[in-house]
Image 1 (cartoon, rainbow, N blue to C red):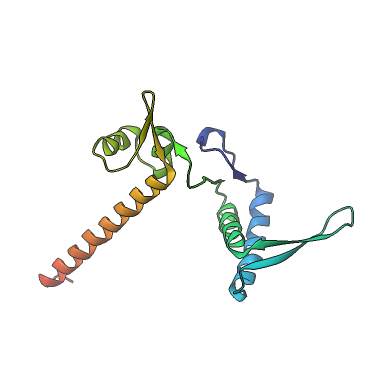
Image 2: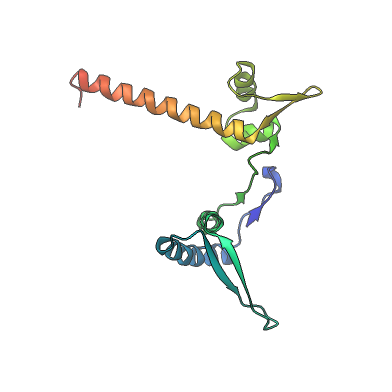
Length: 156
């Protein structure tokens, strides 16, 4: 099930029927994506009233739909967050799986840009994602340094 809420308390898990259908359809879409290089795809909608219609959708939207279906096929609930969304501290913390107090500390250190609305802080989703990417890059860099140090010391 695809939800548009960032509140984890309002999300529901996909039903077994949805999981099964998502598994089949994600495989079919993956096969289509593997053979397509154009920028859009024509999809025939088989309507119950027999007035079938064809719609064009961007291939990038089909890739996103496939990602959603793959997650659903694994029993996961999927949320969509527009890149320009503004999140509360709790929503941002939930999204990147850290505590609210940890995120507040990161904000206080200036590691994530935010703005205030009254006394409340809001974080742009795009800034949160950039913070996550920066942390990931730093982790890889430290890991590479550790590997190199191990090799220099002759540890295998």
